[in-house]
Image 1: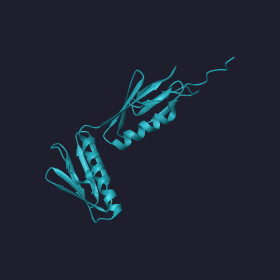
Image 2: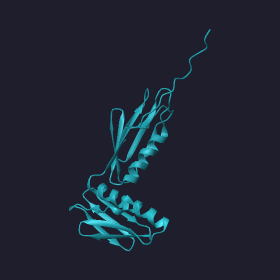
Image 3: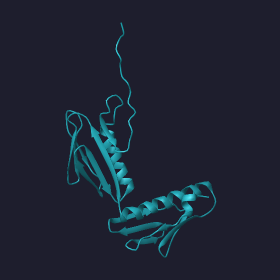
Image 4: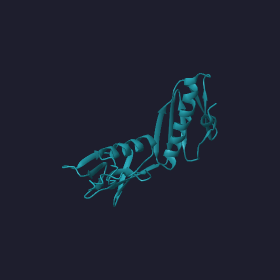
Length: 179
């Protein structure tokens, strides 16, 4: 039994949910999200709750049961309050600037990196941190991972781009020859 799949998704009053065939559409104050679920699960909208059930007891359908419930729950949270990821960058001369849907990053290379944000994701730069926000958890996480990949944190001095809650385990480095 899926412990996650058994729990229904509570739909707030300001959110409109439409289920047609295998397509789920969730519309709220922060936008609209759509998702086509696996045919191995049944998604029902009754009153102010969305329930997900597997078609049969096969391992694949039971795996899709919990995942589908989580994705639908993330859609409801996304259109009501949204998702945020914060990245911090550390290094001499490292800086970032956001203008519209473009993020310009100077991360110690000979050229600036211009990253086009996915549609639905916005960025705000404050001192040495970048705050990404949007209604889709998948897109916000993808954009954060892509930005981090331009200059991942290194273990010796801690320079690079990291998540705000990420802990970098530092290494000692060379100690030099003893005489």
